[in-house]
Amino acid sequence: MFFEQYTGFAIAGLFFVIIVSVVLFLYYFLAKRRFGGTIKVGSRPGIKGPEDE
Image (cartoon, rainbow, N blue to C red):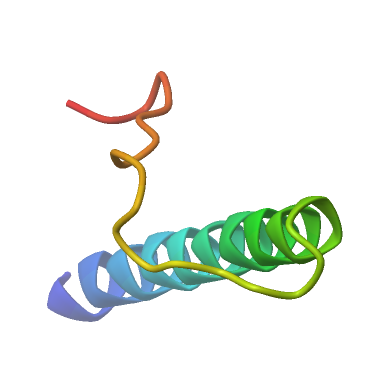
């Protein structure tokens, strides 16, 4: 049914958003500690994980 497919996509999307949020928060926290609170956006290339295609 369409509803079941929509629920599956919603759950997958929710997990994706949570994982991305956690990764960005950890990256921001580590960068803030490493550089003393100053973060230059775009100063380094994007980080690609094994899930990226």
